[in-house]
Length: 326
Image (cartoon, rainbow, N blue to C red; front, side, top):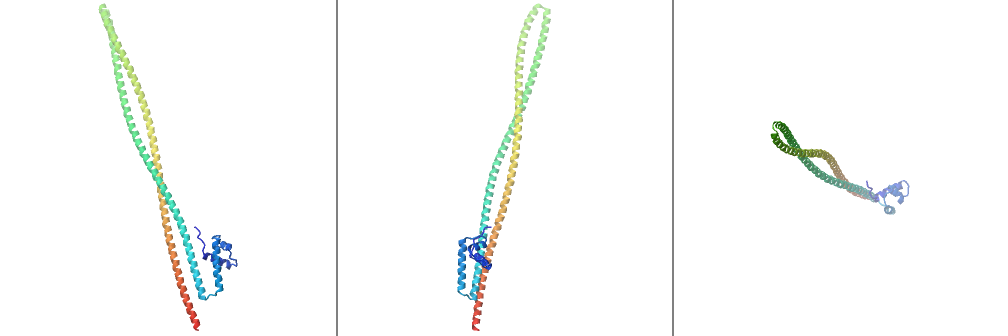
């Protein structure tokens, strides 16, 4: 709590206490009695005023009514000054706490805005990740379709290759049959043999040409099949890599979701702290209202004391008149 300034009533109280103990009420002694507070200049001024008042009282003897009036006036002034000092201290404390509360509210609002910005960024990043994940899933589906298509192409190529091999075997059988027929005809007739031999040679050449063509076609198909197998292996590798990337994106998405949840919890905690600060502010405002009521009560008490003083003076005057008549 902040310490309020000294007043004349406080200095008078300290001076009276020193005189009661038989000590000289010097400036330093009064300041020590006040707890080492207050300006020496202010203390000196109040001491001068009190000494002047006391000296004036010693020179001019006062009546009982005037002494009682002065005493009541001093008490009323002292009560009023102490009440004002207490109110000033409470006001200063309230202002300090209110500034602290406003600063904490501002910091909480700043942090809340930062969390809202971070939450918006995380939401945007989450949407981007979801879009990327959707694209990856679509690409994965396209890759799977392409793999199925290539596998079907491979099966078709294998079927055609088997068909070509069957044709080659059939041609080889035909070739063998032709050679057997040629041998049979060679035994039957020399001329027929020569004629059949020429025809056979012609057929053999054609068959050899066809065989070479089939072999070349078979080699080309085998090269195509090898390339398809390589493409299939590459697509499978890319599909596995995309699967790994998909798992990694899913983990990142889960981590961002956990971070977002923690930030929402921190935001709820800050809102709870703001609620506590608001309750503290309402309590301080209630305390100010009570202090104002206490001040009003002190003012009313001073008015009552002044009224009682007037009644006492009136009674003293009446007593004085009765004494004079006697």
